[in-house]
Image (cartoon, rainbow, N blue to C red; front, top):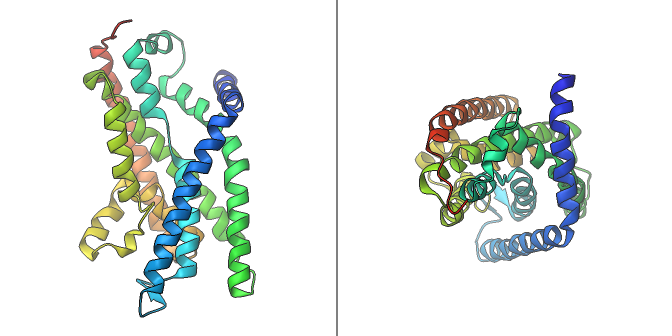
Amino acid sequence: MRRFFKTYLPFSRAGMQMMLAYRSDFFFHLIGEMLVCIVMYFVWLAVFESSDTQTFMGFSMTDMTVYLFISFVTSYLTYSEGATALGEEIRDGSIVMRMIKPVKFDMTFLFQELGGRVIEVVIALVPMCAAVEIYKYCVTGSVMFDPLYFLLFIISTAIAYLVSFYFNVCYGFTAFFLKNLWGANVLKDAVISFLSGAKIPLAFMPPMLQSVLMLLPFASLSYTPVMIYMGMYDALEILWSVLLQLFWLFALWALSKLIWRLAVKRLCVQGG
């Protein structure tokens, strides 16, 4: 174990240095995502104000506000650049340098991203959760923060990130066949944003569609951690949701190993 971390922790330090080197890019991206979140807030505010009832599918406007902002920070933290990074390295041939090193291919990407995630947790997660709890206190007049649910939320979010990482690794390996993933990545991100409940809670979907979406890995990326944070799951639902997350994590990890063995035989560098 000591040798493992000694091998891969330098990749985390490199990820942190990369994040700090491009601070303006990080902050402008964060501000852009926040603006989208604020626009969604006013859209839902208009929906609730035009409604005859105070709640919709079990959500009040207060619940919807908490959902939007916690979903935003969860989606932000669980987003993985694995597909984009893999696509670029396959396209320009720099992936060969990773392949010849005596390290595990996926671990180098994982630890490099984890370095950046440490900074994002400090800058995005902590302030956002604090702001949400202050908002709930101002609306309800009481402290509603539950340390146990927050801890379960952190655990679920960590698993969600790993699910996202290995899904993107599997997706990124398709660059061995498609050669360029830029357009496909845009489509992939849009579809995942919808299917994960990042913009619209899955509870708002028709019952049959909701049942299907809840079993797919995308619900594990955003919807599951957010519902745990909001306390909308009981103990049995939390246990089932986390076990489902772990199932998809193992399944996607195994799939990534299989695809790697098949795809590496088709490496074709463009212009390298």
